[in-house]
Amino acid sequence: DTAVSQTPKYLVTQMGNDKSIKCEQNLGHDTMYWYKQDSKKFLKIMFSYNNKELIINETVPNRFSPKSPDKAHLNLHINSLELGDSAVYFCASSPDREPYNEQFFGPGTRLTVL
Amino acid sequence: GQNIDQPTEMTATEGAIVQINCTYQTSGFNGLFWYQQHAGEAPTFLSYNVLDGLEEKGRFSSFLSRSKGYSYLLLKELQMKDSASYLCAVVDSNYQLIWGAGTKLIIKP
Image (tube, helix red, strand yellow):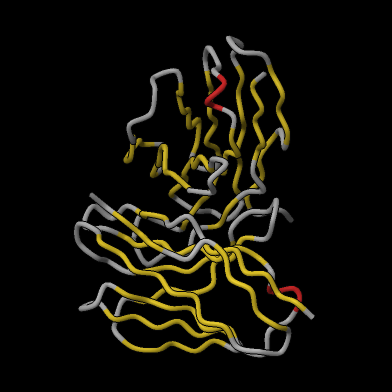
C-alpha cells in the first residue's frame, strides 16, 4: 500500500562509519529525490534522478553517493559519517520533472551520528 | 541569493481563521507550493499556485502575487489536527524547489 517507503526509519551510528538508506516508490513515477532536513527544519535538495539518470546534484560532500538501480529505487550511501550529517533524510518522488508536480515524500530516516 | 521568508511560529484558536505569509526572492519563478508537515512526519502537498489570485480548496486557500513575491495560506475553521508546520516552496528558473524553513502553527482550544 505504501507509496514511498524508506528503510531504516531510525539509524544511530558512530562517526566514521559507512551507512546506506534505501528508498522505493510504487507509484510508477519517473523522478525521485533525496532531501536533508536539519534541526532548523530547512528542507534541502541533495539529489534528483529522472529515469535512473542524475539530474540534480547540489553541493553535497562526495561522501554522499546516490544509486538508482531502476526508476522505482533511489538509495543513498554515506561514507565516513560526521556529526554534522545528523538530520532527517527524506526520499520523495514525482510523476516526472515538470515543476508543477506534487512531490510524494517517504516517512523519513532519522540519522544520528555519535 | 535565493530566499524564502515565513514566520517561525504562529498561534491561533480552534475554530478561528489564520493566515500564514510567505515572501520570496528567487532567480526566476515557476510556481509556489504549500506543504503541511506534522511533527515527526513527512511533508504532504496542500496547494500549487503559478498564476496570481486565490485558489480555494475546502478549508484551505492559497493566494499568490507574483509582482510582490508574496503568497499566503489561509486556514479557516481551525481544528486541533491543523497543528503542524506549513512549508512554502518556490520553483526557480532551474526548476528546482527552494524551501522555506516552515511556520509552526499551534492551535489552542
